[in-house]
Amino acid sequence: MGQMIPLNAIVNSDHPRWYEFLVRLSERIDEHGDRCGGPVGHGGHARDVLKEMGNIDVDRTLSTFDDQGGHCDCEILMNCVEYGGRVGGQDRDE
Ligand SMILES: [Zn+2]
Image 1: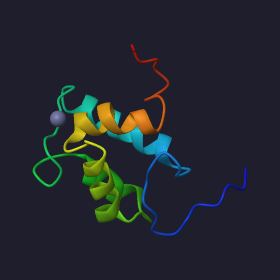
Image 2: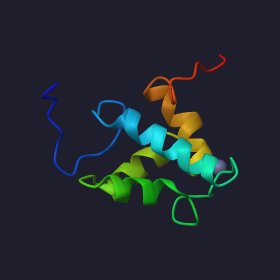
Image 3: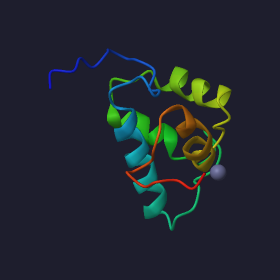
Image 4: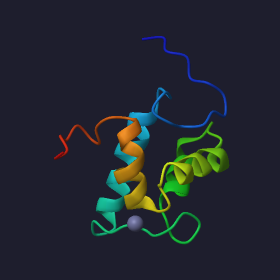
């Protein structure tokens, strides 16, 4: 309750909406036949999801994902989640 949402922040595991982003991206991939949308800027859904969420520094967020090995939708969910914990409440196999 009363958690402050930073203005135009980078979404990462420290961001209060990190979990929301992961769920939204997972759902978007599901809607597209459980297939990765592709690289960021080339059909990937991550940018659209971040834009829809609003109040997020989309470009800096995506470059942070890039640094963490998240170059496309599935890589963001695979590689960047290590920084943030679980996706969609599902336990991941180690
Ligand atoms: Zn992918």
